[in-house]
Image (cartoon, rainbow, N blue to C red):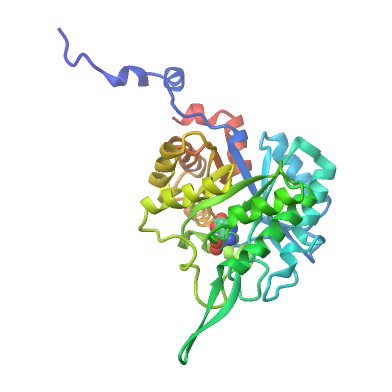
Length: 342
Ligand code: PBG
């Protein structure tokens, strides 16, 4: 009689057996690829904080780049705008001739329903002060401060979403973490007849240092203060369920947890509490750039570590992954690297 009788190692004996019993499979179709579109440039611009990522002018090269994504099997893109003009009310965010609106119209004209177009709905790239909403001065005695006015911001977010829907966006993705943003947007869309435009809500979005590189990419850093009065406290997990529950009640179609890696527990909890909703996780700029920096130094195997990270996000419970690695990871998956490395 040999001992032990139960040997998990039996199923790890070789490549194809391991693959057969693998619980998680990643596909390019799981990815949403974030793309920065910038006004006032005529050539793609490198983003130094995010090696491999560019800011694209609205034009032929953008269409080609999205076509490249489609050819790799990545069917969804998420557009972020980098406008020329900024003001207190972020007016270029809801300008029908704004950079995102023009990019959506172009992609939809050239590629139609081959591509699913998501748009980020926020004001921070468009306001001169860099906050995700309208500022109001609040004074108590002599002590005055600027705070983000939640309800005034809702009106503007609804205008932004509506202008994206008019341009042809399939899904609008509000990211400002204002209370009531999903309902405000849903009502505005429905009132204008855009009942079929879906909402992917940045439902549990944390005030995270992992957004660092993105702020260079989209120049949306707050000029004063920070985002802790609207984004969530990284110490909280239960509260994420409250945020998600409210967005579900307000009519969100797809839920999101952001960032992903330090919040895999939150992804798991949301998956279990809301099993019947699609759940996206945002593998954010800092997570991307850390991998790039470590790989550049020769400290890690970039391909393997990237695929391990992306699988871990899916294993945690996300069925959609928003990631800057989308194109390269899809190439590696096509080459069968997932099969070989695990
Ligand atoms: C804007 C927005 C941010 C990101 C997505 N939408 C930045 C922020 O909240 O500061 C970050 C994405 C990333 O870091 O990749 N509201």
